Image (tube, rainbow, N blue to C red; front, side, top):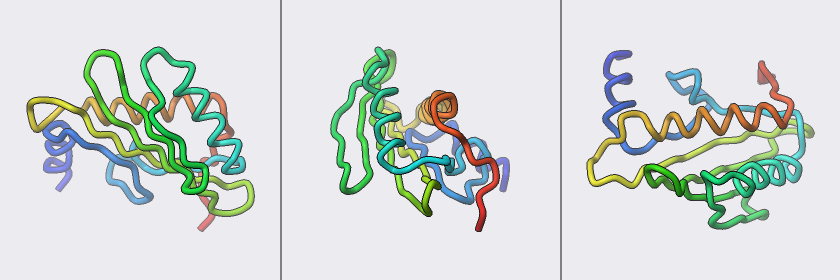
Length: 130
């Protein structure tokens, strides 16, 4: 099963995070903050970067969409959900726009890079209480 997952990671043009993902780098990240502060922080990261271009922001739904405008084109949807007071989940869905049906792991690398940037700004909760 692990070999099949590794192959599909590179021979796919879409990647998304979830709570129980087989790849630990693609698991949902939880931050010790409110939904509003997380939205503002992610909006700043995406808005101030030359790599990303903000597309739309929906505070009611907790979603931010953006485009990657350098190198390969990709569309990013960030979902921010406040699970408990001061425990906010951040999930990503990234689709690469290519002529081929796969991106050799580019969409996964975008998610990993964005999580790394967010981890510098927001306090990460390493173990989520269930």
